[in-house]
Length: 366
Image (tube, rainbow, N blue to C red; front, side):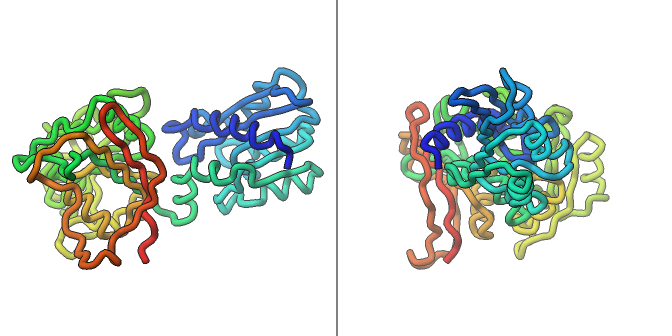
């Protein structure tokens, strides 16, 4: 491995991250072209359906890319999708060496892009900063491996573990800086999911207002169809579509009223208690091309998701406040001994204003 490979791959990773919240269901990809120790081109995948990072880097090149080295965070595609194969473009431009961060988990591509380049006589190096390249696209890798959306739970709580007072008052536990972070998370996810309890109590808008970017699809888990067209989640449906998930008959008058108002209504299988089964809902969302779900509450939905073992990521914002008795984020999980506790791997601890943010991943159930 060349000592400079990691340096240029870091640059490519930084470029790739610029596509965050814009490229789903595609992965974020960055590319850097280097010739005689000088960067001659940069590119990243900017938006789903548009040119790939490699194409943009070649188009951005300040001189001929012949005999140059291409650094790319993900294996170049070798199939016709919405765009032509990048491998053919790389070969036709006589690029001499390709340095790849990670193989593509997409079975249509996986290692075939590498084989295509090597069979054309190019020098290929793989696995440079592979862990970082995979972490950047953990949603894409999870979706390709399991066929299911990547699920994130996010909530804000007091330092004594409450998400609301005994009266249900919760606005605002966390700081304006944490609220802005929460809205950035919304932009980065395909969907935001809440239970009907949260909608009835807070009448939230569930859009991304404090940052620039697209609004996620709003999913309301509403077994008994309590949503009404007057609620905030039923406004601005062209800019922020809403999907009502219910166990009720979608041809029922209440469901049809919501459809006429512009919402989508989906019938989902029920769990034992008669509520929507989140575990059975995920495959239905996957068929709609949804790769990531952000669960923002309330307590019942958060508890159900953890009970069903469908959660991949947990983001907890802890505010330096104490309110004593109140509502907790996670309810009864029927855990009777510490050996049964759900384990997490903490990836990042940071400050957002006066709050502490803990970003972790759920470890597989033992």
